[in-house]
Length: 376
Ligand code: GMT
Image (cartoon, rainbow, N blue to C red):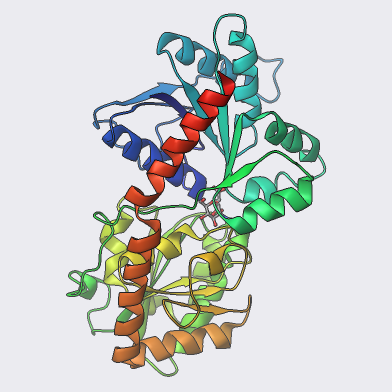
């Protein structure tokens, strides 16, 4: 198929999933056209059958806010016609879904252009639920030719919040199990922890919903019982607060802020435990990537995370803000090698059996076929 993909090209879960999906589809013989304002961060433009079309937003003194949604719609229509796209797949409802609808209407007299919207989380729980965007988010879901959600929890939340009646197909997030795999030697961990402390890792965009300062407090608790070093990968608005807290708690030497990382598959396997203290996660992609690498996630019991992590089997789920509870789980994993071994193996096994790309990508391919056939 010829597929157009639009996403936020920045460090967000939805952009990462869209990018990995595009590369997987190209690997399976589809022509994939990314349409966005920048090259998505994890996209390797050298991959055969991957194309990138930049959306340029012209500005004019009259525009206080340059109309990106319109420039995107125009580019979508242009690419669809020039490259004979079978469908568009947009990630994150606002504004991508509305731009896709406009592109579809622009082309309507000449050609069909069905589009699928994948809901990722904050497009529903935060942005879409905001009074300003609520009606247009609902409208975009109802007008999409196909809607998918990355967890059953998010599907139900969308139906409850927006009262939409069209089908929302649940297609969970996925991980490339060949790329993300355990490193039992933890090669390179000593560069961060020369005294041999075990590594904890947190990966996110450091937004308030991630509660990144909880990671620092958890480390402080853990270090009362077990030596540990924390890797903080990513960047965002709460990085300063986390750095400040680490300094205040005299943990500077025991935390490394790595900033944005392009090859997290090389970093994650160095750790023993992954921390996800989020207020909410509709799926928790970082936990899945950790499990595939044999790193045991200690997470909050929120949103779609329980669909991924089985408490006590391949990870731990604790209450939001329960620093002591999360720290106790981390400490147990660092001090009990057989517990860690068992849970690490179970995590890798479950990630591979349930969420490997080769299990999930065919579900997208099938959905594309269903949507294209229904639109025909
Ligand atoms: O994690 C974020 O803040 C970004 C956000 C997004 O929509 O880009 O992530 C959401 O999508 C990810 C990929 O599907 C999910 O793994 C995250 O759980 C979800 N984040 C939230 O629901 C807060």
